[in-house]
Image (cartoon, rainbow, N blue to C red; front, side, top):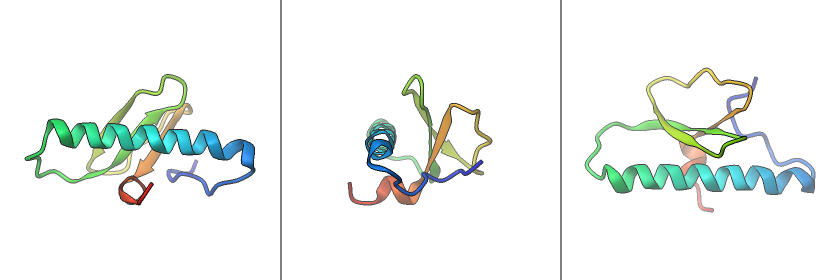
Length: 80
């Protein structure tokens, strides 16, 4: 199982992948808005594809459930 966002495939898959990335960025930004003085550096965001809920992840890369998607820090910080 890949821990990275897969490279964009057919056009039908692109909008879903971009939506996941957009939601992960919202979670990432919300975390830092609520914790501006945090010294911990996250490794990324885990997002549930079904519910849209997600969490900022610290430490090692997570082990994912089948419905979960990991977005690494470098993709969260890239220009949208």
